[in-house]
Length: 64
Image (spheres, helix red, strand yellow):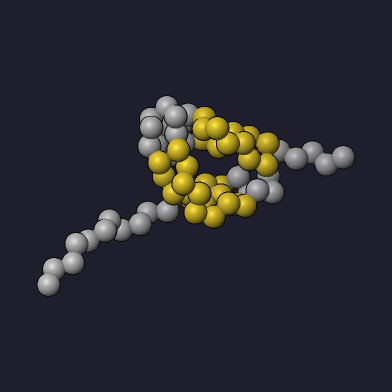
């Protein structure tokens, strides 16, 4: 049997555990990650246990 590494997905803001566990072969795109500790929601990509935060520009109001 293969030795697959499993770890908790940590919040990129406060560095505490979230409710998601990751395997080494997990790939996630555009996940709205919610942290129960700091109560923030962040959009993330996960690939090979590497977490990348997606920073989207704030919505701008349109002027006429």
